[in-house]
Structures are given as structure tokens and as C-alpha cells.
Length: 321
Length: 273
View 1: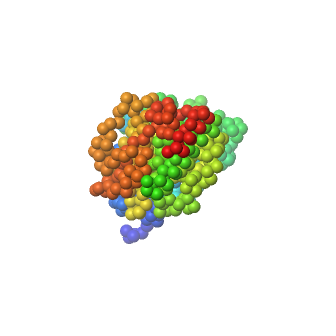
View 2 (view 1 turned 90 degrees about the horizontal axis):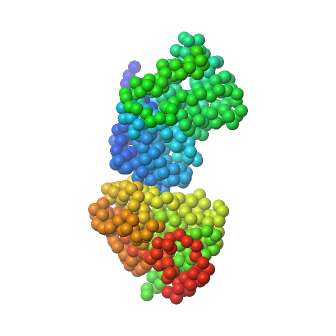
């Protein structure tokens, strides 16, 4: 095989943020209105390739996230489409009002691409863990929230992101996610993906927890549990009907997310279940109403039962086995 | 007085009169004091300095006017209506349910306005972004941003100030409504801003201080080229509640209900100018 042969599965083995960095350059090649903004973190948010190729379309705001988000709104007044990237904890909280008032209220086409979400900045501890972000952005009218399971879904989303009107928040991990998808696909905003059909319980996961849950299914089979798995990678707007149709096939649901269980994926699912009169038990799994401790990412995942083992144990507890 | 200046003064007086009649006719309190500071600034911006087209408000080469102190929306509405962006009659519905014009700016309801504002410490950041966009395209259009002195107490404003100096945004002009008053009183007693010009110069801005009610001086200052590709900061010294003798220079004129009698007196005073 020569070096020129395109790789069939070009994003497998990357993290979702690395996939972002690659697709951003491709998008910028096609759309000259794209500008890239960072706040002293262009390397971490994987904007280096864009920065190198398009230095005149890259702006580093220094460590000033509020200014970056306000200026992102302003850049749209000049016809630009900004991709504004920083850590999720800063885009959701340090610059929250700028995102809400300057970007969302004005319905501006700013792509807020945030990395290091959830507890993926493990040793950074609570100051650098982004656990409130889903709840915060769910509360903003018109905001689209994307949360890819892995690098390939991340790339698939970014190939579609220019078609989304209004502001978009993309929630990416720092860590390399476990592989769920291998081939780039035609991503449909809002549609859940019923990845594995089961019988006893439905796991509904988002972001890196999809891959962790997928592996847990094998372990659960060994324990005689036939669990299904649905990936909800658009957290807003959610296609309620499609989600409800899948949930109706199960007696019990367990939501799994790397965020506070209040106002996150689990809350969104509970809303759908109650408003669609579905007779199903809903359990939520994530970080329970407490500030997190710090530690290496994989160890921290284990500590909060958000790795494969922890998810398996949680399912067995929920099923009282 | 120069004919042009006399004409601009007449427009400014009309804006002031609109502020007073709007305040008089609204059911609730209106930010009368902090709108009367803006009459001359708005007249000069919309009718002389800025290149805008009311018939084609989204024209790509327009100058961008951003009112960061969104509570100055009576003055802005009056200037925009008189420029032809929408009917002057809309002022009669100011602050009524779902009206085009309200206390703070809503871009979705107010045609031709650049951006919604109201929360302090946002507009200058937006203006920096617009100016950066213009720079990327090497465009000729300019950005004018009107801020309040209270907004200089917000950290986000200083992030914007630092970045504009850093990026050499000589296509950006800030007009500071320096009336020295916030709701609680004198800025220098609440959170001292001085020595302001020195601070701004240290942030790599070109700074001019003028009487914000003197049209001729305002025009001269806008005309002046700022050196070394620096963004321009005009400290426009203004008087809160200007035109209502009982309210001039008083923090209590910030947000209040003007009586019919006070309004009549103020309108008569304006006519005598």
C-alpha cells in the first residue's frame, strides 16, 4: 500500500479532540469565513494545525475567556464563523454570560468547541473538571449540544457542523475515548443511536461513557444480563420520539454520563420518560452532587464507577443481582 | 455656529426631547439620566461620523455602532428612528409588552441594531471581535463602541481594552460616556477609575478627552488620526440628566419616573437652547 492511499478508518486511534483538529483544517480549506479562537490553549484544544496553516485567521486571546467569547460574537458581525475553543470548565462557567447573552441570545453562529470535559483532566481536580456544562448549556435557548462518543463520531459531527444554524457547544474529552465507531458516517443532529439491542436493561450513555458502557455489555453478558446500549450524542435538541421508541423496548433504563447527574443526560431522559408516559424505571449514573477529587484519569473513572467495571457493578446493583 | 454643527445640535436636542417625552409617557421608570448624556454623541455618530445605511442595514461595508451601555436605548432608538431605520412612532410604544424598543436592546425586535445589550461589560468585547474581523479582511469600515464609565468596573471590559491595544485595532473607536455616576453615586467614591487616561495609555490606546456635549469638539476628536495604529478612546465628559435642571449631575436621575410638569419644564429648556 502506498502512502497516498487514503486510510479507510482515518480517525480510529485518535481522541475526539484530535479528530476536531484535523477536520477543522479541512473545513477551513472550504470555508474562508472560518476563524479559530483560543485562550492560550491552542495546543491543548488541538488548533495547532489550523494555526499553522491559517495564521491570519487564528486569534489567541491570551488567558481571557470572557473576551474570547464576546469577541466571537463580534466576529460574526464581520461575517466570520468562529470556532472558539478552550477547556469545557471555562467555556461553560468563566465565560457563561458571554456565551448566553452575546452568543446564544443573539442566535449567532459560533461553534464553542470545548475539550477536557467531564473528569478527563483527572489530576487537575474539581477546578478543571467540567461537570455542570451540560446543565448550563441545556438551559440556553437555541443552543445545540454535541457530545461525541469517540474520534470517528467527533469527525462525523464536525463534517456536519457548518450546516447547524445558531450556536453549537461541542463537548470533547481530553482522554482518548474507547472506540465505538470506525467509519465516518452521515451524522444526523438530534438522532440517538441504538448501538446494541438488549432485553433486561437499556444503558443510555453519552461521550466517553459510550465506549465504557459498550465494554461493560460483554461483562454483563457473562453475568447473564442482556443489556442494550443507546448513544445520545446530541444532548440538545434531542429527537424525543426516537429516544422514546427505544426506551419503550426495555423495563429499566440506566443513564451514564461524565457529569453531574443534576440537569445532565439523565435528567433529559427522565423528562422524556415522564412526558411521554413510558412505564419504565429510570436510574441515573454519573457524578452525584459532590465536588470531585483528583487523580489519574483511569483511576478516577474507577473511583466514580464510570469505567467498564464500575458501570457493570452499577447495572448489577440496579438489577438487584 | 457652523451650519452643520447647528444642524447636528438640533438633532441632539430632538434626541433629548424624545428621551424626555418617552420617559414621561412610559408606565414605568426610564433611564433618563444616562440617556441624556448620549444625545450629542448619538447625533454625531449617526448623522456625521459613521457610515450607515438605514435602507440597507446589513450592508457589509457599513460601520458597526455598538451601544454597550444597553440602557442607553432611548437615545439610540431616537437616533436610529430619526436616521430612518424604523418609524419614530415606535418610541411611543417604548417598554410596552413585546415592543420593538425597550429598556435594553433586543436585536430580534429592533431592526438594524448590531447586537443585543444590557448587561454591562459586554459590548466592548463584541466590538473588539468585530474590529478583528475587519482587520482579517483588511476592510475599510470602522467600529464605534459607546460604553459607560460604570462598565470600566467590569473585568471583562479591561480584557477587551488589553486585547485591542495588543491587536493594534486602529479601526476601533470607543466613546466613553464619562458622567462620573453609577447608581450608588460618584464613581470615584464607589470604585475609583482615575487616573483613567493614564491607565488607557498604558494599555496602548490613543486617548482624547472632550466635552461630550460639545458637537464641534466631538467632531474634531473623531477626525483626529490616532498614532501608531492604536485604537482610539474618547473620554467624553458628560452630565447625567443634562437638560433637566433639577436632575443634572445627580445619581437619582439614573432611573426614575419623570412627572408631566418636570417634562414640560425640560422640554421648554431644550427649546430655548
